[in-house]
Image (cartoon, rainbow over all chains, first blue to last red; front, side):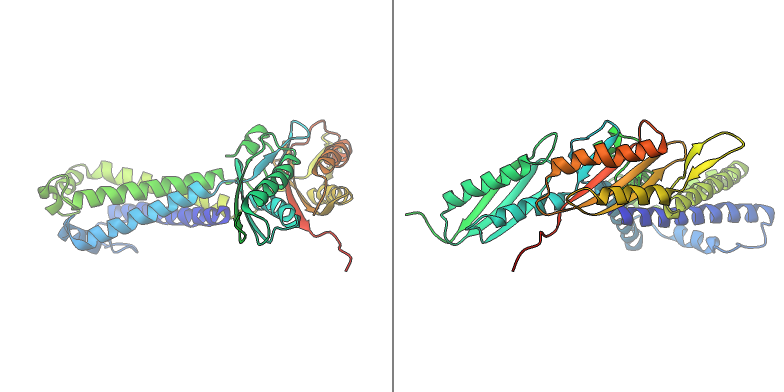
Length: 178
Length: 202
């Protein structure tokens, strides 16, 4: 998303510069030589067309909807282009240490999968919560849940983090308790 | 901006894009508001008479014709401002990130500079010597007056993070600070955990 926002900003900058150049150039040209016609942009034709269209006409409404949607997409792109890193303790005041969410999920997942009896594990990690989804064929859900909770909790607790995320465990088991 | 960049303003984990984000956000908001406003007018929520009026309203055109000189000056000025702002954003977004050299001796006659590649290479070699680090990447970023270090470490599976974390400050960064003769070297470190599998006997 960060690269996308940089590309978008470059394109928007180019577009804004183009519009500015056209506005200043055409205005100055029309002022200096009123009878010469437009320089590049055929604005008299556009003006005539816009004067004939009402706000309620389908074309105008469609264009307005398209502009609104495009604007919304830009806003969403800008809002989602954040660092989503997870902070660890700083060894020195001017040093900041972070890790990625994917990295944390991989670490927890590897340790949970290394546990015997766990067949599959899927982990999603955030700064506040680590969600583990584990499945087993042989353990009951209660056994699996407590073990996965312990392993995942230990994995998270071993990291030097200022605020350890909460561990949420969901388990699936083929065996039902009798 | 994230908390990481707020506590250590000179060092950021990735290239800062605050301006690019702000530009995208503002243009997006303007588009959204303009589009919604046009839809509201077109739907007749502000009166059916208004919805039926032409987009290029005769009232506005009459006003413009009455203030032609003012409108022209304003149009040229606004156009120039947009041109300059747009180009500034474009240049900023496409320009490669700066990697400043360290100036060790600032006297006017002798100037001793260490290239950013040399500093980055030395730090990378030191970092890769830390037990558990499979690969490292270092970059010198920031400005010449406020250089900072950006470091990415790929750790092997099962690495004791606390040991790496201590070695990082006590050995790698301390050596860099000593070599460059500075008390503080703002650094942003990103750790990629569990990237290389431990060797397993088959």
